[in-house]
Structures are given as C-alpha cells and as structure tokens.
Length: 97
Length: 252
Image (cartoon, rainbow over the protein chains, first blue to last red):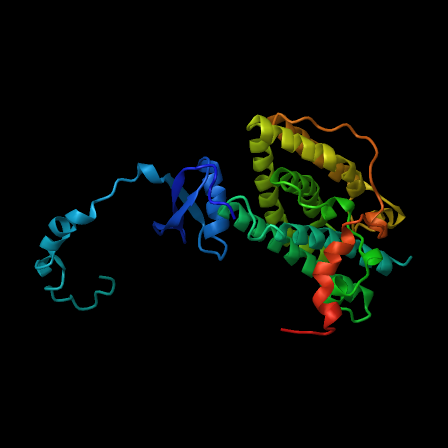
C-alpha cells in the first residue's frame, strides 16, 4: 500500500456511540475533504457498530496544550482533594449522585 | 422448466454476480491506493459476499438436493456460474474498479429495492437487508467517479476510458429471458425495464456531475447468464475453488 501520495490533510474523528452521549475521539485519518473524511471514518471506525453519528475536524483546527506545560497546568490540583465532593454525607435515599 | 428450477437459477444469477464481484474487490486487499480505501473496498466485498451467501443458501433449499452455500460456491464448474460478464472483468486501475462497481451499484440498488416487494418472502427478506448496504455502495462509487471525472486531466481520461470499456457489459444486466419473464408474472422478480429506467437516471445524473460522457449503446456482450464466460472466469474460479478442489471437504 502506498503511503498517502496525495498529501491529503489529516482529520480527527469523533464518534458518538449512542444518542445523548458525547462524541468521543477515536483516531485520525487522511481525506481530501469533509465528505470523504466522513465516508472514510464510516469505513474505518464504525465497522463494528461503534457509532450512530460522526464528526470530522481538520487536525490543524485543534489547538493543544504543550506537554512541557503539564506540570504548571495540572500538578496544582494534586493536593486539592476538597474539590471532590467526597466530604459530604449522602442524604438517606438519594440514589443518583 | 418448473417454477422451482426457475427460482433456483434466479437465485444463482444474483448470488454469482455478488460472489464474483466480491472476489474481484477482495483482490485489492492490501493493495488499495490509500489505507482508508483499502478498508472501504474490503467492507464492500464483505457486504457482497454476505448477500451472496444468503442467496446461495436459499438456492440450495429451493433446489432440494441438499446442496449447501459452500457446495454451490466451491463445487460448481465454470459453465454452471451464471453471473454477468461485467463483474468478472479484471480490476484494472482504480478508476476501472470504481466504474465497474458504479455500474453494478446503479443496477443493484433499484433491484434490491424492488425485490423487497417480491412475492417470495425469503427473497424479499434478503433484499431488505441488502438495500441499506447498496445505498452506501452507490454513494461510495458515485462520489469517487465524480472525483475522478471532475478531477485532473488524467483522472478524467482514465474514468472515461473505464466507462467506455465497461459499457458493452451493461446490456446483459437487463436481459429478460423466458425464465425471468415467468418469474415476473409470478411476482417473484421485478420487471427489468423499471430497473433499467432507474439505472439510466442514476448514470445520467452522476456522469453529468462527473463531467463524463455516457458511452453510446453499441454491441452488448452477453453469455454470462448462460454460463458462457470470458477468459478471466477460469482464473477467478481457480483461486476461489482451489482449496476445496485440492482437499475435498477441508474445514477450518
């Protein structure tokens, strides 16, 4: 198989597995335009009934946090366990919390 | 010919078209122009073989001699295969493969839709399952044909050459012999004049968008439905049937 000779742009693929749930990132693929990206995503990522809706996003449109910033961004949350609602007593009979 | 024999042959005609086309598409596995298309064609080959299996199983039941789908796929001789010559044509370049599938899809979708109303409940059920697959197949092949036709000078030239080369094989899809007419009267098979009208409309619309020219109807090849195939068919069957011929009854 040749290695993408056309330099088609890269697309990030998001699949919704069930109505009402979120679209989850499942991977990426190459395609010439959005239409082709959706059809390719259908063939590559929904062969085993994984989804009922597809989003495709040009990979270049996604901005990402930088790995070297990870400590600054995420570590400060390490010692703030009080941000989890674990210090409350569950009211009697409350089921879905 | 009894109604039962006619139905048996009718099932084989549809099944063999699908089985042989599926085999041709499977030859692209691992050789697709891009990974995504490689998977798309393999999916499509699996769809075709799934429908072929249902039809062969049903053909075996209709015949009533205890033959299974495997017996019918692996142990019939070339002259007993009744697929059209269209589907046995070699893959050629990607435009040729796409054009061959497009012409088949433009026939297969309206056929499957019509068969959902067949008086034969089993044929109707098999067609009902195939309709959604056939819709996607037609969209896939139409999209690619448009991209090729309305693409670069070279892709346009190749797509037009593919259509010109394949056109002679389209006539056979719509031939209504005595066997078929009998099944139409019984409400089992659809009248192919209506299927041809739908085929013409699809072809005209897609080719217009693709900026491709519809080839002029000329000599139309035939013989496939009577088991008289081209020089490629023996090679196809050699590959499909080798294992069961060399090791009869082999299982895995």
